[in-house]
Length: 221
Image: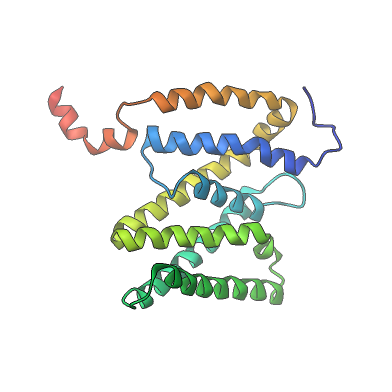
């Protein structure tokens, strides 16, 4: 089945066909490597935020631009969320109003970025659509949720590992040869079904655990 020459929007087809690959990578990163994240949905959203920021006007995404502007955005959101949460953490407020206050501050930061981008003609910074902007706010909310239950160190590591998972996922789906293969043979994604089945059955040590317990494992040998 070859749809590369179809009149259907190739950018939409490309994104749809890469979604299962990103989801599979996130599952692999969690159960084989041991990288924690905010979950499949949030990590996937961040991956495609990088993808959108790297678009060059066609269906292909340029990794250099995607990572450059995406990481700037992620760091700004992290700093804004952390600072805002640190300010209101001690306030005697219900959880949802606290979230609303932080979302308001994050929104002001995003608005400032857009205004600055327009002012200095940095169009790459304003390629995000409405859905992507909402996704960024969801990322901030997930981070706040961890901060409210865990200490800052744990939240920082989960945030960082979510970003790492998203970055690697983005590099995978921005590989031109892979996207072309998916466009030429879209049914190839069915191979991901047995891959995910095997991932779901895996009960062994993760790569991180091998490294963490390497001294114990060496002593047992």
